Amino acid sequence: MNQDDRAPFVQALQRAREAAYASGEFAGQESFMGASEILALAAAAGIAPRVSVLDLCCGIAGPGVLIARELGCTYAGVDASASAVAIARARARGLRCRFEVARIPPLLPGRFDVVLLLETMLAFPAKEALFQEIAGSLAPGGRFAFTVEAGQPLTDAEREAMPDADTVWLTPLPELLAGLERARLAVRWQRDWSRSHLATAESLAGAFAADAPAIAGQIGDRALAELLAAHRLWIDWLRSGRVRKIALVAQTASAPPVRTGRPPASARPSLPRAPAGPPVS
Image (tube, rainbow, N blue to C red; front, side):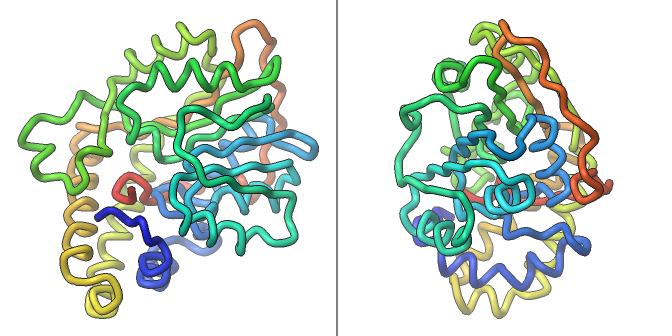
């Protein structure tokens, strides 16, 4: 289910995604996060006007455009998919956004107040090396805001069952936290969104199944079957506790905590909502 040509997938899944999310929660994202969660994480990271943001693996930049529009930051997105970046650029017209097509690491040159990595930590086997790169890209007092699928590495049987398993690298939470500490990134904010992401995974799987003929007509039967299989696995793993979905903000350790005011009403999580990046590669 490698979506190098992103446009057909975006078009094929748009109607089902709109149906799967609660009112106001869909913002063009390709993940299990809802719009309220995206904005809550951004607020916890101190994103605001004149704050510079680097969004790694931004994809079509549904979350990035939402953050830039609502919070007025200076935004740079990077993704390896040229087709995804083309869609992101079109969606971001009129906003203070720029985009680059590149694989990471390495990161874009320069220093940023905030680095985002939303719903794609899963794809990096060497997470601690990535943390070191990110720490080097943060300005003094900078923040790293991200979501992660926490759990023991996949078994051989699980890897066999998961489509695109070469992009699924689970990490136990204690191991991840230790890696952040060694990169001199101190956790300042942490939330467990497993329940809300389970609810969204279930809603998305149901919406994709309900719209299956139209979706298969655009992306093919095999891609649809893999999409549904991946969602069903995430549902099983989140429901059983095999995987936990965690959102974190870590800050350069030498700096004091960032003061983050109460998020706007639109940024407050509305449980049990939120949606599906892990199955999207």
